[in-house]
Image 1 (spheres, chains in turn orange, green):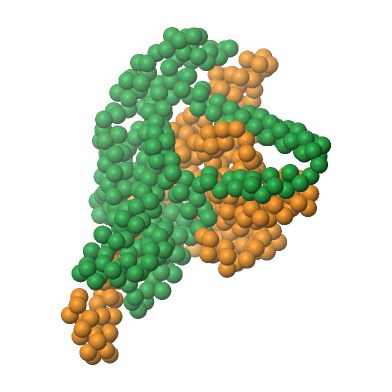
Image 2 (cartoon, rainbow over the protein chains, first blue to last red):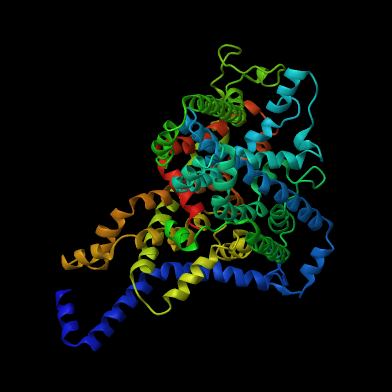
Length: 318
Length: 306
């Protein structure tokens, strides 16, 4: 090390050049796993997927046969495809705003000085810790029409039979949405952290001006956390369009395609029925475009409701 | 993270004491009402969130004759004889040693893979200058936006061409190449560590590897823990990937065995199913209580960073 420093001092131009080359070498050595991974598991598959969506291929038919836009043509004439788009939009349109509203309200309340506040925060966050199949099975039993928790309780209290929930075409989708709302703990914690980042001087000033607690929540806290709400909105939209596990385990898309979520359709086309991989790739691309459109709409809407106090400051805090 | 609540209290107290006593008393009553009503609301909501969990725990201990009974029985020992046999029976039915063994293999391998690959690549981005670095970093960030389902099918084709379907390899190889999110997160943390510390180590004779191991890694332990815990819980719960790649029982993970429980059983023994579900949930819940700080940091970083 010392020797290199000396030689660099003696012949600056030449030495720095060599040092810079060594640094560059180290950079590419360290980053190489990600570059290889990018080519193999990300860039490669995505380009392949774009090409494969224009082919027919399944486990028996290999190599892929070029079919042009046939997969896309099949899609727009497919009843099942349009059902899956419809129910996925329904899910996203209800689940995303409801869970954001719930997370915001609970975060505002859990920021107040109430007894056992950290215990309450843990309880509200806990459902978000667990996920996957176990949660799906838990809720399948809760919604069981005769002896599940919901209808069992309704019967015990009122002696009437509740709805069939997951078995009813009207209630199946609301049931899945209720399950998604149970796990709003993640965004809630994020809002809570954002609320606690708000400078207390703002509240003190408004208290001297005589603003009440609700007024302060509405006029100070809420506007100041809109950037974080916006970020969560984007994440939530992207996540909700890709919901799979609950629909696959709990309802298998039924009854009558009322919970036939988009990715479930894609999975079935690729892996469950004949294994039409090219069609599944086309479905994946269309989903990507749908998500992109919704994300762009969200970005466009931001100027009307997202409040940036001072952009430079915000970046510094994060 | 709870530290900043109510730091304003000193100043507001001061402001209050200036006002007349009757106004103070009225404010006090108002404040008590406010706190009480919020507490009631929060407590009620908390109960609603916890009831399904209580129902699951209660069902997991019920003998079969009690499961389908109205009005519902809730309390083991008081209302019914607790049947702990549901647990060993359901675990034996799932072939728990095999499936949890596989789950642990995947989860632990992927935890190390995520931490090591993430830290190494992040080190490159955080500390070394090179031509093309900005382009690569922009590429890395843009991949965060790409949904997994877009590459689901081609990735499957790749692994099936390589003859790796029905092995754990498709699940445990990709993490070794680094995930964009972990790289980004760890890089951000490394950037906050002053370069003077690197220089000090350099003077002491440390090379790039020495600086990484002795200077940077110890400084970002918290971030590494966040990555490790996020990775563990994600892989413990992951369903879509194992579902696609693992067909035969000997390679299945617990999530798949749990999903197949009803079909394999040919009916739904809810008491045993709930026992199996509880077993699947408990490790994550324990991990949460042990490492609560890192869970919360992980959530908050991933949410606020954007």
